[in-house]
Image (cartoon, rainbow, N blue to C red; front, side, top):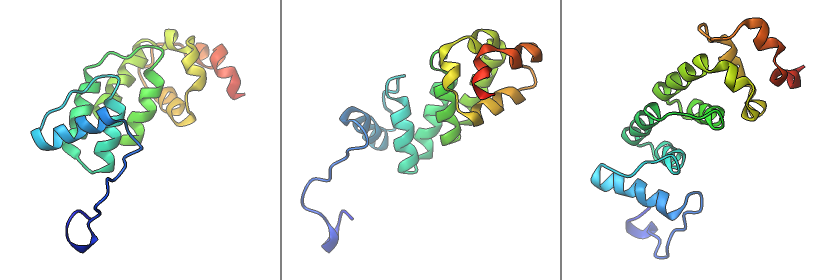
Length: 144
């Protein structure tokens, strides 16, 4: 509580996010705009989810939709987008995955993909890779 008898007089520490991330979040609350980049977007999405600020979540979704992923970060971003239900950006990533499946299967980051994301990838209808190549891939041998 901020007002009345229950108001706290001492500072309330915020330890889950950095000062700069929280500052950008507050800037959005007060001014309706903030600086979103690849370094802070996941923290801002988390803050928007935690404080139920759907407009900011939508802004992050739009930012991520227009951001080009790399083979190194595509699966981690996918996991985060699924957690926060950022469907537009997730659809964009799935499109990237369908086109670049052969390259992504050979990347080290594929070995760290979570099972639910892997299941979503395997179910993609337009995956540009032969099914035999997908299931014979060296990367998938750790699942056997």
